[in-house]
Image (tube, rainbow, N blue to C red):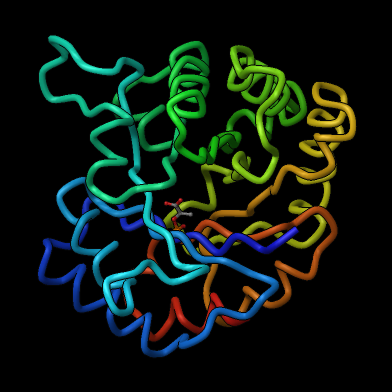
Amino acid sequence: MKYLMAANWKMYKNRQEAQKTASELFAKIGTMPEDRELVIFAPFTAIETTAESFKKNGQPVKGFSVGGQDLYPASEGAYTGEISPGMLIDAGATWVLTGHSERRAIIGENNAFVGQKTAFAMNAGLKTCLCIGETLAEREAGKLNSILEQQIKEGVKDLSEDFNPDDFAVAYEPVWAIGTGKVAGVEEITEAHNLVRSVLIKLFKEKGKQIRILYGGSVKPDNATQIIKLDNVDGVLVGGASLQSESFAKIVLA
Ligand code: PEP
């Protein structure tokens, strides 16, 4: 299983900025180490230019991928403002995020809708990273296990049985650690990731052992090495520290 080192650029970077950061990253990393791969979840308008920046002699380079941050679960139609998996693929994306906590909290996406998106994306041929995580209030109310279990179950409820586990990942991102500088402690990360793993095994048997579980929430160059060494941590999803090539290259090579 390769580590998945993922960047979430959120609503930052126009095409020129994306091109600059992606090219710098490409140069700084050079050949991607065999045990890992990188994906940049770019704003829709910057997907194409980011994917182009990861090519050599016009060909995509192994280990460098681009994804969208969201999709609408339909191939096309009267869905003003939305984007389909086919459009993401056409722009150069091979991955997509579903259920990011900012979409849940700000846009109001619920588990059922996130589940529809996840299955639709996978069926359309996009590798998919389902984001889950509890708020501070939920954690303090002792609801960590039930919230995560519910988010996973509903998030995968329509996935077809025969999906490839390499094409699906779950990102555990405690909401209180996203963009706050508060990184979850080693014990908190281990507890949550073990729980996620046990739910995945309950749902998918052997295949559940091969699904990558990423940690997200204030990952920085100085904590990334410690985090990816933990059991059941198969990569990271990085917001703030992925915006500069310098810091994200350090994390990718952690
Ligand atoms: C994120 O947006 O998924 C995230 C983890 O952000 P940050 O690294 O800034 O906490």
